[in-house]
Length: 155
Image (tube, rainbow, N blue to C red; front, top):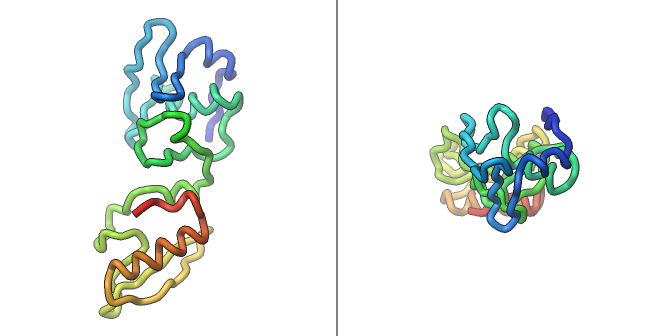
């Protein structure tokens, strides 16, 4: 990630942040009319993602990894909703892939059964074949909890 060019002190001079509501406003006019990036994240001009600005304002330094929104709502920048995450952890807390046909993460139909599979650190792990999508999903969720704990997306 590219570091934010301003220091935490400069950001605090330029912006006001309410950690309870997650709203970041300009001190100059009190507005928070940020545009949305193509990924759906609020962006301050071409400056930076709001959640990265908030992180630096709150911690004093740029995040080393990504900033994950615990509840998966990209514009919810309440402080208790943000956490630093590796790219792998962040992927586990995302939504379904666009080509998903089962309706469940890590579940697909193969050989007349529902197969559960999880990818951790670039390595695919077969979790078994199941009679139902729900049973395969249960296996996936258990594995996700084991491998990434709190970063496993809630069903």
